[in-house]
Amino acid sequence: MPIILQNVLVILLAAYMAWDNGTGNQITGNWPVIIGMLVGLIMGNLNVGLVIGGTLQLMSLGVAAIGGSSIPEYGVATIVGVFIAIRTGASTGTAIAVGLPVGMLTLELDVIIKIINNAFAHWSQRLLHEKKFEQMDGVFYLTIFVWMLKYIIPITLVVMFGTPVVKLILNVIPKWFTDGLTIAGGMLPVVGIGMLLRYMPVKKYLAFLLAGFVLAGYLKLPILGIAILGLAAAYEIYRINSEKADAQAQGANNVNTADDEGDDFDE
Image 1 (cartoon, rainbow, N blue to C red):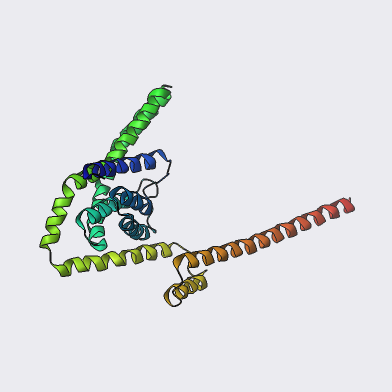
Image 2 (image 1 turned 135 degrees about the horizontal axis):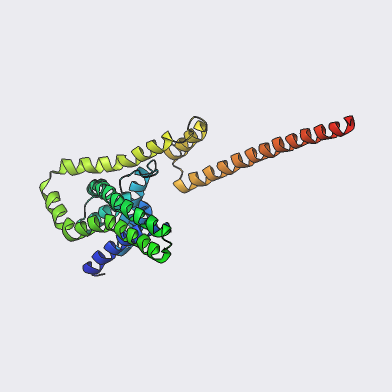
């Protein structure tokens, strides 16, 4: 595929990611593992796309934008990382180290876009009171277009100017520094998993956590096999809890029935 066409498709993917996320369709969302796969397909290296996307997906597991809060744009970081890795031949750690700052800087655009869309929200509310529903729909799509700029602007800049800059930097910086970036990139998934475990009932299901660690670390069982065992354990726990809940509900119904019959007898 010609390089120009690849560049255009990568920018269009960023635009679609924003559209999909802004309209609530969530077909691809901005999940790094999905976005990384798509960028890898566009640029002809699916393996690199999946590796970088999967790494950033693990890192983002414990992060969520609640309400109006802003979080790093891991989808943007994935596009940048995969693009730089394939186009320049940089290592996974180096590509992630380049992509993450771009995702962090997108936070500033996120705040600006939300301020602009807040004005559009008031405009839309005024149109609602005036019962101008068609114009109200137009304002809705205008907000999505503005939202798309949050992804299009940084990705376009990286696609147009990022490759030569990164190549220049990689040729100048020493090897020990790039090795450090590679090691840091390998540690990032651990950070994401640790953040996720913070919000999970680890103490309640500590036995399953230890069992999974033994299966992966000592018995070298593939991840898919561990996932299937985890699914089986989750289903069994669900079945047992459902039976307990049904038994408790049946017991409560029996008590209520006995009370009703006793009242009738007393009368």
